[in-house]
Image 1: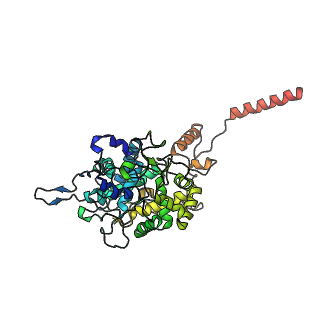
Image 2: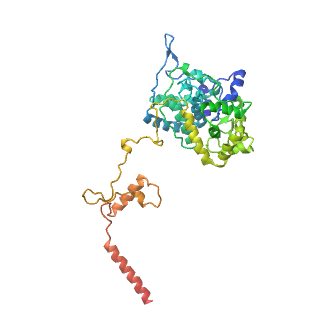
Image 3: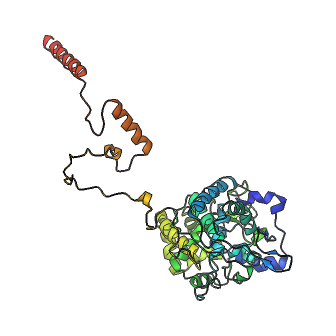
Length: 429
């Protein structure tokens, strides 16, 4: 995780004052997402952002309104490599959620409505109590932003979040990209739009916050399941134990208390553990307990505890919806990286419809093209490598799509002679 980075003195955040810690602790550990909270650190001054010009004016580097699809795909592969070496899945999910979770459906104007607009990179929002520790997440992905300037911060945050879920074993998120970035820190949303972990009335508080975003009870519970990843530290968030049997050896920096035993694996164990509450080494926040105490929430929590596939399906939809909140897309329909959202195929992806079998335009019938999958006992398409191997062996024996494999007459004669000899021996005996 990003804890591994914390061993560097340059990444160790400064300790907040007692009053600051009391004011922000509940919020840090609340948003149903990977709450591996840190002490608040001075936000990094991102390259070209928030720099003061000699004349005292604010110098702003303008980002592209829409991201380049090829660069997004390459960035996704770089994110996967970071995840393999730093175990930072929780903090990257949290980064994407906290950028989009400021959305207010009651405000129509962009960017005043908040949401996924890359505002979290600016000092005013990064300094919010609920965003403590996300400095480290920005330091992790800033080199990727530098490498791929054709990607907006808003897209990069959401790409990192979805990739972290998928790489941890979670469902494929039906994401789209093309989010525009805000361009100045004055456009950041006000503090206080993210949920607390220990409100007086947990269920009511969750509804107040998430209904404001346009989410419903099913989506609240599904998103709560992301707590299957991550851990909380009492010295940084005010919640959890200093260490448990599940966190004392890392990975990453040891310590903290996780919601699940395998806290880097995305599955439905969060719902099972919250329901049973048998393990004192696993964390249960007031907002976690509420999903099994509130009658409406409980319906979905019980379902997800028993049916992981149902949880994955609902989570994928809720995560995608959350990642789009408040965003301004260019193009308006967004950009799909996997062509899994009904996008129009490119010229290279289009396949011509085959002509009817009896429509030969007067020419001789053509042999049927070789399709290796037809010779498989399963319906799955064979790999290109296997197709080439089968065809090479077939043609090596003299066969081809245009010519049937000829018989080996010498071999046939030998088989007949052997058969006759065998029958003769039987008669003789």
